[in-house]
Length: 122
Image (cartoon, rainbow, N blue to C red; front, top):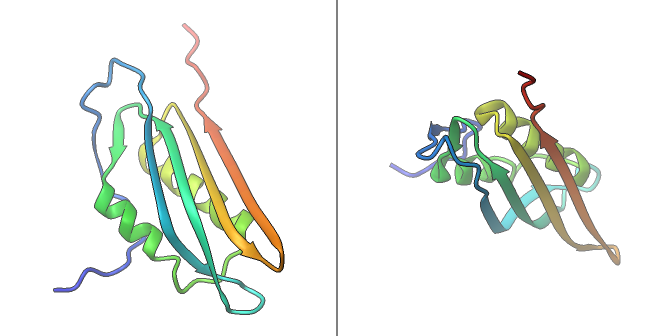
């Protein structure tokens, strides 16, 4: 059975929940469509996060990112949607998603969106 794109982000328990550490992912093969022209936009997506109780499973992340291949999205929107969906799935201590889009019309675009969980006051 062939693997298909999916919006489902699977998770697993953080194996070191008592330690704050950073996880980084990078994929140079992200594509979506320009919502105005329908032409493909290519980008490198970089994700950095400090997990709390959960981590994101890599195959589901790959299939999630693949799901944008046939969707029209502005660079600013798709970068923020990726951040929002990941934060909703794993509720990390902090996360940054960077969309580093290839040159289009002579302009190189980099969009960075960040999230930080409020510290509990005790």
